[in-house]
Length: 97
Image (cartoon, rainbow, N blue to C red):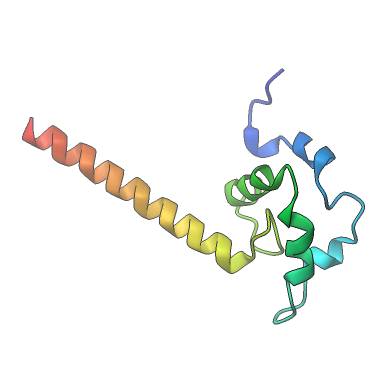
């Protein structure tokens, strides 16, 4: 059975390295090191799923998929630019046809 809204699917969490780890590790105080949390994520088999979950759900805080809020913001920005470029390319192609 496929979950209708993939943003709600959290079955990947059952396989996460962070399962059972103190959640505070992944939500450090501003300016504190994220190194330990990222180490937990480094070899995780569901790292990509975790990151995608955070991106799709606009998680603003914490380490998700081995990335900080700032790093995820960069990914969201780049994806938005890529989408815009694709839209413009299609519009340009349609206009010249």
